[in-house]
Amino acid sequence: MAPRIAWRVATVRAVVEETPHARSLVFEVPGWPGHRAGQHVDVRLTAEDGYQAERSYSIASAPEDPDVVLTVERIDDGEVSPYLTEEVRAGDQLELRGPIGGHFTWRAEQGGPLLLVGGGSGLVPLMAMLRHHAARGSDADARLLLSAGREEDVLYRDELGRLESAAVHITLTRGAPPGWTGWTRRVDAEMLRAVGPAPSAAVRAFVCGPTPFVEAAADHMLALGHAPAAIHTERFGPTGG
Amino acid sequence: MPLISRGFGGRRRRDVDPARVPPGQYVVDDFPVLSAGPTPRTSIADWSLTIEGAVDAPRTWSWDQLQALPQETFTTDIHCVTKWSKFDTTWAGVSLDVLLDEVSTEAAYLTAWCDGDYTTNLALEDVTDGRAWIAHTFDGTPLDPEHGGPARLLVPHLYLWKSAKWVRRLILTEDDEPGFWESVGYHNHGDPWREERYWGD
Image 1 (cartoon, rainbow over the protein chains, first blue to last red):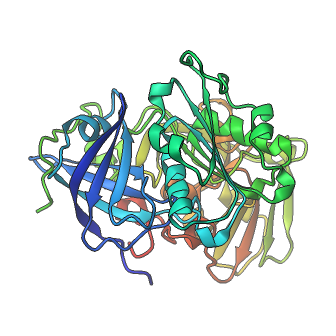
Image 2: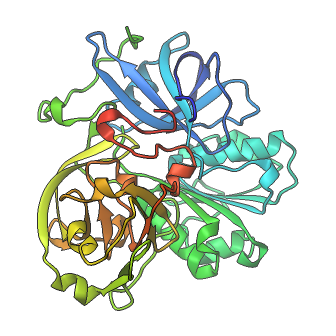
């Protein structure tokens, strides 16, 4: 019988504003057992009167990072994300339980080629994979296709721009800045074909984003010939909060 | 005493009876989708359901044969391990009692096998006595593929990953054999009221 995954007290070391709607919280978590890229944690908040709210958030940091980083996007009518994206500051403490999830994960030992397809904040667990890939100096072919609204909505924009260990492709679906040479349409089969690799390369694919995005991207990948079992998906709805 | 989160007030929903919310869950009004891979799309012409494994003789139902069995419409709360719960969902389908009555078995467990190769394991005592259905209709309309259509298992007293989408085979087994999520960290039983989310809970 596996031991119960403990709730741990996590202390906010730093807050990083990522976009107008999202920030990363850098946690120090004493006793953290380590995680695999792609896993998530449960977060528990407790009000003064004992009322509690729990939500799950993907881990953005690589397993090699001593801190645990969560990137949270604000959902306007949400309960937990407005608190995490507006109220929390360095020095605050909250409770974390994890890591959780054993399917939507990638370890460098598993090799590639790796195709990561993210919609909006669906990039977060994929970023953990890219950071792990870079930290380990993996020679696996790694490619990211990110669909975002506008350029200012792109999480980790500077880090992605500097990333040399993976090919980064971005499509902006709600308007591109002057001089933008990338795509400006929703992810489709032609875009996925251009990003590659070909399905015959035995690609490991990870797709994360809102449900309609994941449904569409996974359907296009099946149509291109990727094996259903090679396509790992993780979805989140407007629900959450 | 749990750790107080400075400045957190929470947004309690006045319209939700807290006694209906299992520990750690919150109530949603939409219907989120979760699955581990692409959505399979099997036409009802190609669809069938088979009970096999530790049975005297396997039984298979086509879509039309399933529809010819006694149908039930029922309203229930559902709970996903990712923490959302949805109240008063209305489904229609065939009780597993009706289907299991058609086979003779000494088995105590089953593995639900689905298009897309998803599996989940259940004790027969969790899927009998009016506690589980093969559901094909949600809110009066055919179940969407992303929610498990043409038909899914529905076992609403357990976390929703036990309610396998796109179910095609019920494989009866003498031993309890962990399924897909049960093999990668999720609880073998999954009772939301006992908060059986993960290994060791």
